[in-house]
Image (cartoon, rainbow, N blue to C red; front, side, top):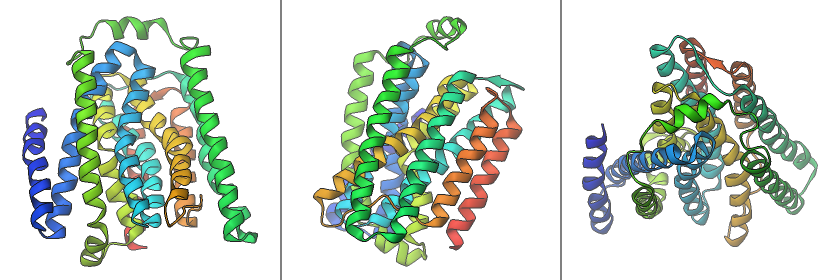
Length: 351
Protein backbone atom coordinates (compact mmCIF):
# COMPACT_ATOMS: atom_id res chain seq x y z
CA UNK A 1 0.00 0.00 0.00
CA UNK A 2 2.85 2.39 0.83
CA UNK A 3 4.33 1.78 -2.64
CA UNK A 4 0.99 2.63 -4.25
CA UNK A 5 0.80 5.92 -2.33
CA UNK A 6 4.43 6.66 -3.24
CA UNK A 7 3.64 6.12 -6.93
CA UNK A 8 0.49 8.26 -6.66
CA UNK A 9 2.53 11.05 -5.06
CA UNK A 10 5.40 11.08 -7.57
CA UNK A 11 2.94 10.96 -10.48
CA UNK A 12 0.17 13.09 -8.98
CA UNK A 13 2.20 16.13 -7.92
CA UNK A 14 3.80 16.74 -11.37
CA UNK A 15 0.47 16.03 -13.12
CA UNK A 16 -1.25 18.53 -10.82
CA UNK A 17 1.22 21.24 -11.81
CA UNK A 18 1.25 20.35 -15.53
CA UNK A 19 -2.53 19.97 -15.73
CA UNK A 20 -3.06 23.32 -14.05
CA UNK A 21 -0.67 25.10 -16.41
CA UNK A 22 -2.17 23.45 -19.51
CA UNK A 23 -5.76 23.98 -18.32
CA UNK A 24 -6.92 20.37 -18.51
CA UNK A 25 -10.56 19.46 -17.96
CA UNK A 26 -11.79 20.39 -14.50
CA UNK A 27 -13.20 16.89 -14.02
CA UNK A 28 -9.79 15.32 -14.77
CA UNK A 29 -8.03 17.84 -12.56
CA UNK A 30 -10.53 17.27 -9.73
CA UNK A 31 -9.76 13.53 -9.77
CA UNK A 32 -5.98 14.10 -9.94
CA UNK A 33 -6.04 16.65 -7.13
CA UNK A 34 -8.15 14.44 -4.84
CA UNK A 35 -6.00 11.32 -5.39
CA UNK A 36 -2.79 13.31 -4.91
CA UNK A 37 -4.00 14.86 -1.66
CA UNK A 38 -4.96 11.40 -0.37
CA UNK A 39 -1.49 10.08 -1.29
CA UNK A 40 0.22 13.02 0.41
CA UNK A 41 -2.01 12.53 3.43
CA UNK A 42 -0.72 8.96 3.74
CA UNK A 43 2.81 10.34 4.14
CA UNK A 44 1.53 12.73 6.80
CA UNK A 45 -0.12 9.80 8.53
CA UNK A 46 3.07 7.71 8.51
CA UNK A 47 5.12 10.64 9.79
CA UNK A 48 2.73 11.39 12.63
CA UNK A 49 2.56 7.67 13.48
CA UNK A 50 6.35 7.69 13.89
CA UNK A 51 6.13 10.76 16.10
CA UNK A 52 3.29 9.13 18.06
CA UNK A 53 5.52 6.20 19.00
CA UNK A 54 8.08 8.64 20.39
CA UNK A 55 5.62 11.01 22.08
CA UNK A 56 2.95 8.61 23.41
CA UNK A 57 -0.69 7.87 22.52
CA UNK A 58 -2.27 11.15 23.63
CA UNK A 59 0.24 13.45 21.96
CA UNK A 60 0.42 11.05 19.01
CA UNK A 61 -3.32 11.20 18.54
CA UNK A 62 -3.21 14.98 18.82
CA UNK A 63 -0.48 15.14 16.17
CA UNK A 64 -2.48 12.91 13.83
CA UNK A 65 -5.60 15.02 14.31
CA UNK A 66 -3.70 18.31 13.92
CA UNK A 67 -1.86 17.48 10.70
CA UNK A 68 -4.90 15.65 9.35
CA UNK A 69 -7.00 18.76 9.94
CA UNK A 70 -4.27 20.97 8.49
CA UNK A 71 -5.28 19.69 5.05
CA UNK A 72 -8.90 20.61 5.62
CA UNK A 73 -8.00 23.97 7.15
CA UNK A 74 -5.96 24.84 4.06
CA UNK A 75 -8.78 23.78 1.70
CA UNK A 76 -11.30 25.76 3.77
CA UNK A 77 -9.23 28.96 3.79
CA UNK A 78 -8.93 28.90 -0.01
CA UNK A 79 -12.67 28.12 -0.25
CA UNK A 80 -13.46 31.13 1.98
CA UNK A 81 -11.26 33.31 -0.18
CA UNK A 82 -13.31 32.15 -3.18
CA UNK A 83 -16.55 32.96 -1.32
CA UNK A 84 -17.65 29.32 -1.01
CA UNK A 85 -18.99 29.62 2.54
CA UNK A 86 -21.56 26.87 2.02
CA UNK A 87 -18.89 24.35 1.03
CA UNK A 88 -16.73 25.31 4.03
CA UNK A 89 -19.55 24.80 6.54
CA UNK A 90 -20.59 21.59 4.81
CA UNK A 91 -17.02 20.25 4.85
CA UNK A 92 -16.78 20.92 8.58
CA UNK A 93 -20.08 19.11 9.06
CA UNK A 94 -18.61 16.28 7.01
CA UNK A 95 -15.53 16.24 9.25
CA UNK A 96 -17.65 15.76 12.35
CA UNK A 97 -19.72 13.02 10.70
CA UNK A 98 -16.69 11.46 9.03
CA UNK A 99 -14.58 11.29 12.19
CA UNK A 100 -17.31 10.13 14.57
CA UNK A 101 -19.06 7.70 12.22
CA UNK A 102 -16.74 6.78 9.31
CA UNK A 103 -13.30 6.85 10.95
CA UNK A 104 -14.40 5.49 14.32
CA UNK A 105 -16.74 3.04 12.60
CA UNK A 106 -14.04 1.63 10.32
CA UNK A 107 -11.59 1.50 13.24
CA UNK A 108 -14.01 -0.41 15.47
CA UNK A 109 -15.10 -2.67 12.61
CA UNK A 110 -11.68 -3.59 11.21
CA UNK A 111 -10.08 -3.85 14.63
CA UNK A 112 -13.04 -5.90 15.82
CA UNK A 113 -12.63 -8.41 13.00
CA UNK A 114 -9.15 -9.22 14.32
CA UNK A 115 -9.85 -8.86 18.05
CA UNK A 116 -13.20 -9.86 19.53
CA UNK A 117 -12.99 -7.19 22.18
CA UNK A 118 -10.88 -4.02 22.17
CA UNK A 119 -10.56 -1.52 24.99
CA UNK A 120 -9.47 2.08 25.31
CA UNK A 121 -9.16 4.62 28.11
CA UNK A 122 -12.65 4.97 29.55
CA UNK A 123 -11.72 8.19 31.42
CA UNK A 124 -10.63 9.85 28.20
CA UNK A 125 -13.85 8.67 26.54
CA UNK A 126 -16.00 10.24 29.24
CA UNK A 127 -13.96 13.44 29.26
CA UNK A 128 -14.30 13.73 25.48
CA UNK A 129 -18.04 13.06 25.69
CA UNK A 130 -18.55 16.23 27.71
CA UNK A 131 -16.51 18.28 25.25
CA UNK A 132 -18.41 16.81 22.29
CA UNK A 133 -21.72 17.72 23.93
CA UNK A 134 -20.49 21.27 24.53
CA UNK A 135 -18.80 21.86 21.18
CA UNK A 136 -21.47 20.47 18.87
CA UNK A 137 -24.76 20.63 20.75
CA UNK A 138 -24.27 23.91 22.64
CA UNK A 139 -21.83 25.93 20.54
CA UNK A 140 -23.37 24.98 17.18
CA UNK A 141 -27.08 24.91 18.04
CA UNK A 142 -27.17 28.09 20.15
CA UNK A 143 -26.16 30.45 17.29
CA UNK A 144 -28.86 28.97 15.05
CA UNK A 145 -31.53 29.42 17.73
CA UNK A 146 -30.62 33.00 18.67
CA UNK A 147 -30.00 34.14 15.07
CA UNK A 148 -33.70 33.74 14.30
CA UNK A 149 -34.38 37.15 15.89
CA UNK A 150 -31.08 38.80 14.95
CA UNK A 151 -29.82 40.73 11.96
CA UNK A 152 -26.63 39.75 10.11
CA UNK A 153 -24.38 42.09 12.12
CA UNK A 154 -25.53 40.73 15.48
CA UNK A 155 -25.35 37.15 14.23
CA UNK A 156 -21.76 37.67 13.13
CA UNK A 157 -20.93 39.27 16.50
CA UNK A 158 -22.44 36.27 18.29
CA UNK A 159 -20.41 33.94 16.08
CA UNK A 160 -17.19 35.82 16.84
CA UNK A 161 -17.86 35.70 20.59
CA UNK A 162 -18.58 31.96 20.55
CA UNK A 163 -15.51 31.33 18.37
CA UNK A 164 -13.21 33.06 20.85
CA UNK A 165 -14.72 31.07 23.75
CA UNK A 166 -14.33 27.79 21.83
CA UNK A 167 -10.65 28.46 21.07
CA UNK A 168 -9.90 29.36 24.70
CA UNK A 169 -11.68 26.24 26.00
CA UNK A 170 -9.89 24.03 23.46
CA UNK A 171 -6.50 25.35 24.56
CA UNK A 172 -7.55 24.82 28.19
CA UNK A 173 -8.54 21.23 27.36
CA UNK A 174 -5.09 20.59 25.86
CA UNK A 175 -3.44 22.10 28.93
CA UNK A 176 -5.59 19.85 31.14
CA UNK A 177 -4.78 16.65 29.23
CA UNK A 178 -1.13 17.28 28.43
CA UNK A 179 0.08 19.26 31.46
CA UNK A 180 -1.94 19.39 34.68
CA UNK A 181 -3.50 15.91 34.37
CA UNK A 182 -1.02 14.20 32.08
CA UNK A 183 -0.88 10.50 32.92
CA UNK A 184 -3.39 10.80 35.78
CA UNK A 185 -5.93 8.58 34.02
CA UNK A 186 -3.44 6.62 31.91
CA UNK A 187 -2.89 2.96 32.84
CA UNK A 188 0.79 2.10 33.19
CA UNK A 189 0.36 -0.82 30.75
CA UNK A 190 -0.11 1.67 27.91
CA UNK A 191 3.36 3.13 28.49
CA UNK A 192 5.03 -0.28 28.51
CA UNK A 193 3.37 -1.38 25.26
CA UNK A 194 4.18 1.97 23.69
CA UNK A 195 7.91 1.84 24.49
CA UNK A 196 8.44 -1.54 22.79
CA UNK A 197 7.71 -0.37 19.23
CA UNK A 198 10.28 1.24 16.95
CA UNK A 199 9.18 4.22 14.80
CA UNK A 200 9.36 3.84 11.01
CA UNK A 201 11.14 7.19 10.66
CA UNK A 202 13.31 9.21 13.00
CA UNK A 203 12.01 12.46 14.47
CA UNK A 204 13.94 14.67 12.03
CA UNK A 205 12.80 12.80 8.92
CA UNK A 206 9.19 12.63 10.14
CA UNK A 207 9.08 16.39 10.73
CA UNK A 208 10.65 17.05 7.31
CA UNK A 209 8.09 14.82 5.58
CA UNK A 210 5.25 16.60 7.40
CA UNK A 211 6.56 20.00 6.34
CA UNK A 212 7.05 19.10 2.67
CA UNK A 213 3.73 17.25 2.41
CA UNK A 214 1.86 20.16 4.00
CA UNK A 215 3.37 22.62 1.49
CA UNK A 216 2.39 20.34 -1.42
CA UNK A 217 -1.13 19.90 -0.05
CA UNK A 218 -1.51 23.68 0.29
CA UNK A 219 -0.69 24.19 -3.39
CA UNK A 220 -2.94 21.39 -4.66
CA UNK A 221 -5.80 22.38 -2.34
CA UNK A 222 -5.80 25.89 -3.75
CA UNK A 223 -6.16 24.41 -7.25
CA UNK A 224 -8.80 21.90 -6.09
CA UNK A 225 -11.11 24.65 -4.83
CA UNK A 226 -11.38 26.15 -8.32
CA UNK A 227 -12.84 22.91 -9.71
CA UNK A 228 -15.74 22.64 -7.23
CA UNK A 229 -18.28 24.76 -9.08
CA UNK A 230 -17.74 23.09 -12.46
CA UNK A 231 -17.72 19.56 -10.99
CA UNK A 232 -20.90 20.26 -9.03
CA UNK A 233 -22.74 21.55 -12.11
CA UNK A 234 -21.47 18.75 -14.37
CA UNK A 235 -22.15 15.82 -12.00
CA UNK A 236 -25.28 17.29 -10.42
CA UNK A 237 -23.71 17.49 -6.96
CA UNK A 238 -24.89 20.18 -4.56
CA UNK A 239 -22.48 22.32 -2.55
CA UNK A 240 -23.73 20.52 0.54
CA UNK A 241 -22.84 17.07 -0.83
CA UNK A 242 -19.44 18.20 -2.11
CA UNK A 243 -18.61 19.67 1.29
CA UNK A 244 -20.09 17.00 3.56
CA UNK A 245 -18.82 13.95 1.68
CA UNK A 246 -16.11 14.73 -0.91
CA UNK A 247 -14.10 17.53 0.72
CA UNK A 248 -14.43 15.99 4.18
CA UNK A 249 -13.12 12.58 3.06
CA UNK A 250 -10.25 14.05 1.03
CA UNK A 251 -9.35 16.58 3.69
CA UNK A 252 -9.31 14.01 6.48
CA UNK A 253 -7.62 11.18 4.60
CA UNK A 254 -4.54 11.29 6.84
CA UNK A 255 -6.31 10.52 10.09
CA UNK A 256 -8.70 8.10 8.34
CA UNK A 257 -5.78 5.88 7.39
CA UNK A 258 -3.89 6.33 10.66
CA UNK A 259 -6.84 5.50 12.90
CA UNK A 260 -7.66 2.31 10.99
CA UNK A 261 -4.03 1.16 11.08
CA UNK A 262 -3.84 1.82 14.82
CA UNK A 263 -7.06 -0.13 15.44
CA UNK A 264 -5.76 -3.07 13.41
CA UNK A 265 -2.65 -3.04 15.64
CA UNK A 266 -4.95 -2.99 18.70
CA UNK A 267 -3.80 0.52 19.66
CA UNK A 268 -7.31 1.72 20.37
CA UNK A 269 -6.28 4.64 22.59
CA UNK A 270 -4.58 6.28 19.61
CA UNK A 271 -7.39 5.31 17.19
CA UNK A 272 -10.08 6.79 19.43
CA UNK A 273 -7.96 9.86 20.19
CA UNK A 274 -7.60 10.45 16.43
CA UNK A 275 -11.32 10.08 15.69
CA UNK A 276 -12.72 12.02 18.66
CA UNK A 277 -9.73 14.34 19.06
CA UNK A 278 -9.99 15.37 15.43
CA UNK A 279 -13.71 16.08 15.84
CA UNK A 280 -13.04 18.26 18.87
CA UNK A 281 -10.25 20.07 17.05
CA UNK A 282 -12.52 20.80 14.09
CA UNK A 283 -15.40 21.97 16.28
CA UNK A 284 -13.42 23.92 18.88
CA UNK A 285 -10.44 25.23 16.90
CA UNK A 286 -10.60 24.87 13.09
CA UNK A 287 -14.15 26.19 12.72
CA UNK A 288 -13.70 29.15 15.13
CA UNK A 289 -10.41 30.07 13.43
CA UNK A 290 -12.16 30.03 10.04
CA UNK A 291 -14.91 32.32 11.39
CA UNK A 292 -12.23 34.81 12.48
CA UNK A 293 -10.20 34.40 9.26
CA UNK A 294 -13.32 35.10 7.18
CA UNK A 295 -13.35 38.65 8.60
CA UNK A 296 -10.37 39.41 6.34
CA UNK A 297 -12.21 38.28 3.19
CA UNK A 298 -15.06 39.80 1.20
CA UNK A 299 -17.54 37.17 2.42
CA UNK A 300 -17.74 36.56 6.18
CA UNK A 301 -18.79 33.21 7.65
CA UNK A 302 -21.15 33.27 10.64
CA UNK A 303 -21.38 30.16 12.78
CA UNK A 304 -24.66 29.02 11.19
CA UNK A 305 -25.44 25.54 9.88
CA UNK A 306 -28.58 24.26 8.19
CA UNK A 307 -30.99 22.25 10.33
CA UNK A 308 -30.09 19.12 8.37
CA UNK A 309 -26.42 19.61 9.24
CA UNK A 310 -27.15 20.33 12.89
CA UNK A 311 -29.42 17.31 13.36
CA UNK A 312 -26.89 15.05 11.63
CA UNK A 313 -24.04 16.29 13.85
CA UNK A 314 -26.03 16.09 17.08
CA UNK A 315 -27.21 12.57 16.22
CA UNK A 316 -23.61 11.51 15.50
CA UNK A 317 -22.38 12.90 18.81
CA UNK A 318 -25.10 11.18 20.82
CA UNK A 319 -24.54 7.84 19.06
CA UNK A 320 -20.78 8.03 19.59
CA UNK A 321 -21.18 8.88 23.27
CA UNK A 322 -23.50 5.92 23.85
CA UNK A 323 -21.17 3.51 22.05
CA UNK A 324 -17.83 4.72 23.44
CA UNK A 325 -18.59 5.56 27.08
CA UNK A 326 -17.91 1.99 28.28
CA UNK A 327 -14.33 2.10 27.00
CA UNK A 328 -14.77 -0.98 24.80
CA UNK A 329 -15.51 -1.65 21.13
CA UNK A 330 -16.28 -4.52 18.74
CA UNK A 331 -17.01 -4.99 15.05
CA UNK A 332 -20.78 -4.70 15.45
CA UNK A 333 -20.52 -1.28 17.11
CA UNK A 334 -18.29 -0.24 14.23
CA UNK A 335 -20.86 -1.48 11.73
CA UNK A 336 -23.55 0.52 13.54
CA UNK A 337 -21.53 3.73 13.17
CA UNK A 338 -20.88 2.98 9.48
CA UNK A 339 -24.59 2.36 8.88
CA UNK A 340 -25.42 5.75 10.39
CA UNK A 341 -22.84 7.41 8.11
CA UNK A 342 -24.28 5.74 5.00
CA UNK A 343 -27.82 6.80 5.91
CA UNK A 344 -26.74 10.41 6.35
CA UNK A 345 -24.63 10.28 3.16
CA UNK A 346 -27.66 9.16 1.16
CA UNK A 347 -29.70 11.95 2.71
CA UNK A 348 -27.19 14.66 1.82
CA UNK A 349 -26.82 13.28 -1.71
CA UNK A 350 -30.57 13.40 -2.36
CA UNK A 351 -31.13 16.70 -0.55
